[in-house]
Image (tube, rainbow, N blue to C red; front, top):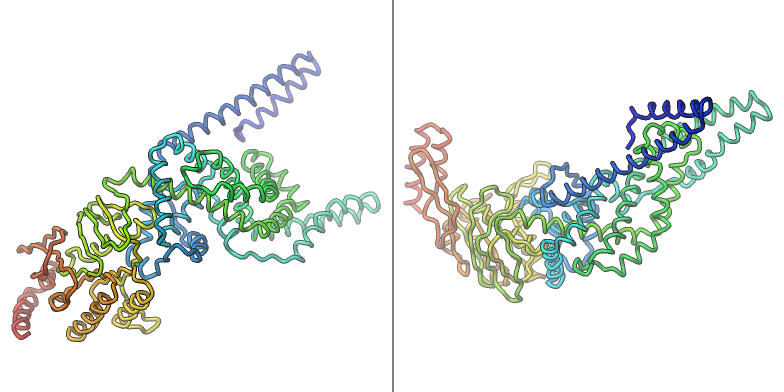
Length: 577
């Protein structure tokens, strides 16, 4: 690429050679042409070297987690499309929030493109309940891990699309965009205003000058006013053109290994040839400003005079509406491929992972499971027979909530990206619902207890029509008094068990754990010393016999008299129960 600094030098050199060729010897014309030709070859060679280095870097760093700014409103637009698919269960807002799924998404994202980011986000949000589809994903991910040639081709294809300028593409494809047809017609007539004013010069020079000035002012205003509204969408068309080009290249790879629907995607590409040509016109304009910035001012003047970009954009938009479904097929093909590659990359970074085993009528068995977003996690294992629940007791901060999140996210990862952060995973296809991070709402006037009640009620409601539900409940009904909490909790948990719903429940209340039947009992423990509390975060069979709430008062610096009196009071209350 020729820099701005070199441009004046090249122009001056060209003028000197022309003058010398004219005044001295025509050989200088040949020398000038030869130098120009060599310059072109040099520029092309430099571009090739830079491109090869770029692809080499992308291939070397394909499994590196990228530092990015995430715009969740963009991801949501592709997510909306997947709500209507039959072979998936959509995680509700409560479960998504409880399990810190946005942090998990950022942790595992190694995508190259905007459609890849969006497809990964949507995949995590929509739990697949089709075992065949999960097997297909697993085979494709394994192929990308093991087939170096295939992986390198896919990396080059996706790297050529990139992540920049793609954020508005989803709005172009998945949101309704309305334009004023009368205004578009006005723009089409306005492009003839300046040429018409020049013709007036031949008839009436003063009138022609006035018409020229007025038409230039109006067209300039129209150009910039329109550009405010369509600028981002025009960039999206440029981005979509890259997606379409690289999708064509993708179909030339070993797509059978990636399980791409070649017939459907090829048809979509053929049907959208005309719209790609229109996208490329806008790309050409943008390239003029990018690669030949020295001459961009001339292009902008022509653009303003004839309103080229706005008119080309509105012309392209008509075709977007006509071939919207085909454009979505192309977009999703790239997105799905990028999601699969991102998962393959993730696997190379995990110290331990397993692919899930799905068996109908199976219980749940997980070995050495860890919570994927923790830097130094402690692994735990559990096996639950179908029809049984799990009751977990333990003190504050002992690891109960993290364990619930570990098991729940293991199920989600198993049924989305076929990759579980454990050494073994076996279960039937499950539908996870959680009630973990409940909070009250000042705006709605909803108390903490009412929020708890509603959260658990939604689990009961959904389980009435789906026996694949697995529930995760933390500190059940902690927002009310002990007697009513114990009674209500036991009845609800017994109801879930009778209806074949496996529930993982964490609680401080030992009464609930002792009274409930049909639930396997586990606990976390700690060691309390004079100045510290130590947790090993390992899961043990049985019921906890320790508590640390009063010890924490001491550790954070409460007055000694409060701590000592609270210890005595706790013993008195325990004796009276």
